[in-house]
Image (cartoon, rainbow, N blue to C red; front, side):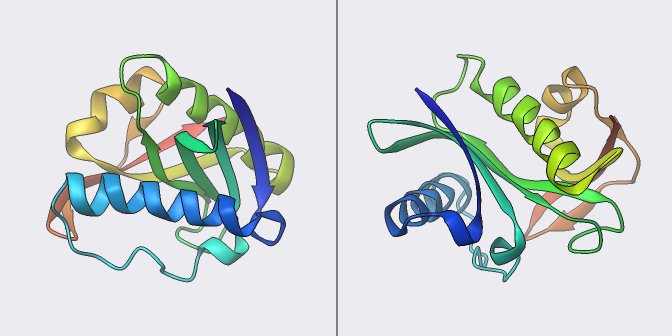
Length: 145
């Protein structure tokens, strides 16, 4: 397994393809949720991913302040191999990237309600009421770093 942290402009075509492919598999197909994944935010993001033999095992993107929220944020957080600690690892690397690349002292995420417990274990706290995003219940969560 190899950790990669790359700005969008540094991604190879193959890496970008694999990131988009796995996001579609997890968020659109697996969750049966039609939404536009290519939302224009990737171009300014740092992409943090764990790869093995060209396959993405975990990924997220880190966005600077003012892109999704006034605070630095992370999104499109996923793992393809659940129960192996990759979710925790990718969050740790995402937090480190936000701090190093954007000077973040706080990170906000829009989390699916069903994943609240996972994010709380990583140190995030709920800061909003439940709202619908693409037909799925979400909450905003923050962590101070």
